[in-house]
Image (cartoon, rainbow, N blue to C red; front, side):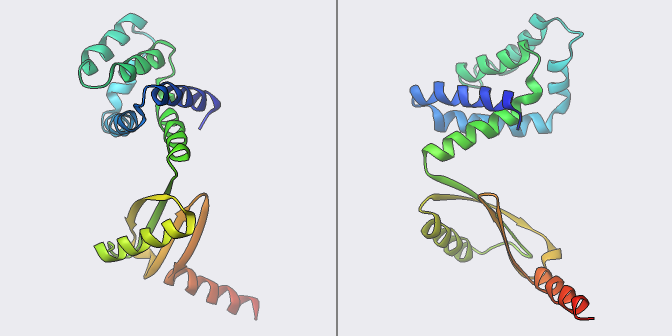
Length: 178
């Protein structure tokens, strides 16, 4: 994330915090992030400097007026006017970091060979909540390459208790002993 994205994302968060809109705006940011990823041509159009700034802003206004909160629309227009719409995902990440900090939320990603059952998910979230003292937002991934066990990424740390990792450790130990 760039310093510019951090500045804009935190600025939007500060405004929304004053107005008690952080939860709604975080949800809108996440929907827009998904939309922009699904429709990259829309973002390219809004970032096309050969179109006059007013025209790009009008396209944005026509597409999103009444669909998003006025603060969000104005935020997107500001990014568009300044030619920095490409910083949107960084702004969303900065907003989310501020939200998580203020609401005692930690984001964790768990990778397993098969999808977690409801019971496994609840147990994992409960353990992580007990460890961190925070609400846990869990993202789940499946990857047959892990072969079994759990790979957990949280707070910039990686906890690898997968069969694949254990086999790699055994392999390294065997090579080191040769």
